[in-house]
Image (cartoon, rainbow over all chains, first blue to last red; front, side, top):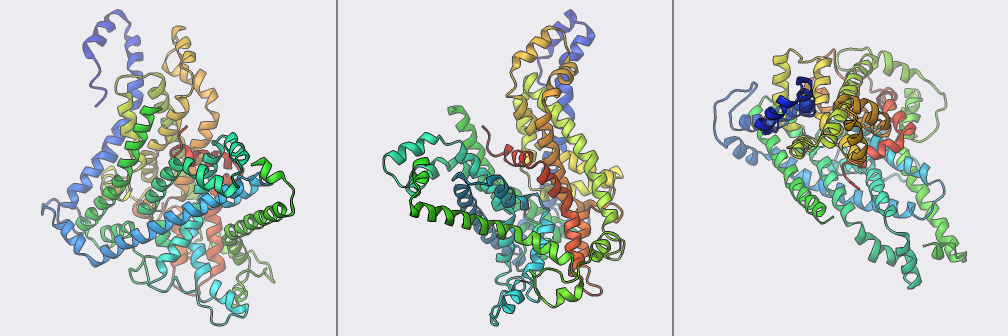
Length: 310
Length: 292
């Protein structure tokens, strides 16, 4: 679309002066962008619209186009399983974000004290981020399994009554997901905070120390407020990860026990692909999109405003 | 900060020791799952059933690794992960190459040939970084069917290229925007064309960002599960999907050692890349979030 708003008359006038290859050369940048733009318009924006249209139909096993208005959304909100999934997302996402921020900030501050072997430690804290969430799910499922995992290990140390059955306890399974997800992503938050800390002027510390402020006080009063933009970015990325969480649930709990650990992403997949309710599944996908937009729009707004000031 | 810490009072020294102890404990916690995976994969099944999650193997065996690679059952087929590993390779290699090349050209065109609407183009492309993929699953399944690419490796390559361009364009655009325009302007005056400038001036200095882009795309595509499980057929499933099937195959005895060996096999390529080129991995992760 942006290729067509080029000033045609002017380029025609110039084409008369330039050779044919010259005008082709002038079009090249647009020609290079065109395929990617076409791809985005179709595969991103077109598909969003397409899924929205599907969510207005009573499509079952196969997509079809008998429109029934917003009835699928009404069904979705009345669906017990969707409500569990949405509530789970709030619990999972909230805890995931808070714990990642806390652990990430703590590790970053500790690492920022001129630690020997800092590089090695950083590598260790961050490596889970390189793993597939399926791998993470598989290994935590093994560690947390009540029969042979941590529970039996602690019992073998002499604590016979120790129970750690989060994975099979419908009330606790969601926290098992949080645990694995925090293990995976907290190192990444640490890396973000560490980059933020390194960009703070060292003189700030020296000045505060001369004033007799203790180190914890310097961090609490001066450094952490400086990191506000990093917190903002981190929250936005983590929230995005939480909304899209699918792999980890599939590998760690499979949504179970029952559907106790369903999240919107697994709900959408189950209804669309295994239960043959494409209309309902599409409605849930659109709700997920709305969730992402609700986080993204304020973020982009503040970013753009920040750029204007800078 | 220096003053506070370099004062060698006993209290400060204690604090310092506590700091290191805390960091070491945290490191152990982060390493634990990997250690458990490795230990379990090297033990025979009887030893695992006897308990002792963290104990070293009494009799070291690589049987679980061999089985996970060559003969473990994923669903109804019992050919191990090797075939699926190769599927992942044949999806990742073309998808990474194509999306990185397109990202480089896009970033170049958007920054060094600022045509009208360039910023709008970038904004439109960028949104692809943020969409939840659930919103494209159903239309993509239909499109792949129409194109005759359903359940094929090429179909998955297409999907990963399509949704990777947003990230690669972001990387290259942000990198090229910091390269002085004067270099390009001079070359233009000398009569160098679009591709010549790209090839002679920009590509030679793009090493770091190419590495970032390749590593990012490699990790994303290798670790993908959603597209694999939604669009792949039996012959084209990537290793993540096969691993999930392997672990969830309920027939016969549960072989935890084979599960763990399989998980390590699926994790090794990205782990190796991370250990070898961690710096670039981190840059990719933070590229979109902390600009400047």
